[in-house]
Length: 80
Image 1 (cartoon, one colour):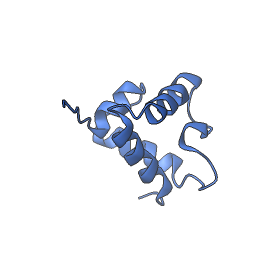
Image 2 (cartoon, one colour):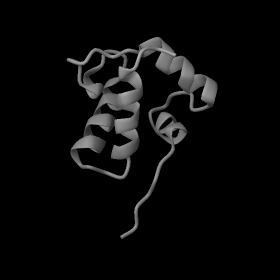
Image 3 (cartoon, one colour):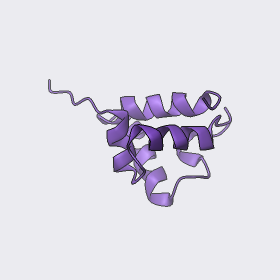
């Protein structure tokens, strides 16, 4: 079975966001912590296309699902 492992920076690039370390840190700082009662894809800062991508990757348990879960966890933590 071939599994693809994606990096955080690749997910940010896929979402059309700055994907360098500084850009990722800035995004997490600006949007953390995400309240527990808000699903990741329902967060108000996503565009419709970004929300759809996140939702589909989790629902389909696609190869991006693990890194999307990591993004979810990172956004639940207090801003660094």
